[in-house]
Picture 1 (tube, rainbow, N blue to C red):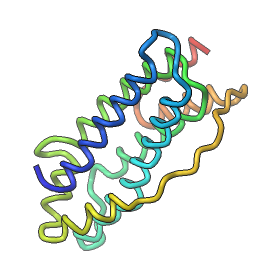
Picture 2 (picture 1 turned 180 degrees about the vertical axis):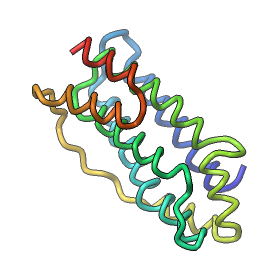
Picture 3 (picture 1 turned 45 degrees about the vertical axis):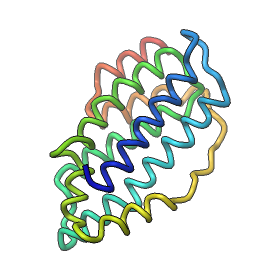
Length: 171
């Protein structure tokens, strides 16, 4: 495992732990821990969108990775799921999408290993850029009437139709 993969896969595990801690009691969510999860996940997405994917494109002579569009659609769906207050349904959909999304990023053929290979000797510099990435300011959760339909659209755009149906049925 190289530097990028080691760093970002460890962050996946940290985020998974925070979400698990936030939802120890079924149907209830610890607001402080969930806020840390939410903030951390948005920072993680920002690291990938603003640092990792652009670096990969630079290493490829300006050519984005073939998987970049899918990752960006997933990031949009994941970020949208962080807008409303957590519910059992929202967290179930979030976990489902994160599980599949993380498989694209981790492993020998995943995004992170690919970036390690592309970066070569510059991988340590890339990890340092990721390490010092800024926190993302959080807005309060929004549970307004337009949120669920917007969530469903973002989730469908990313190719998760069953998850969108679940959210609409629950809302």
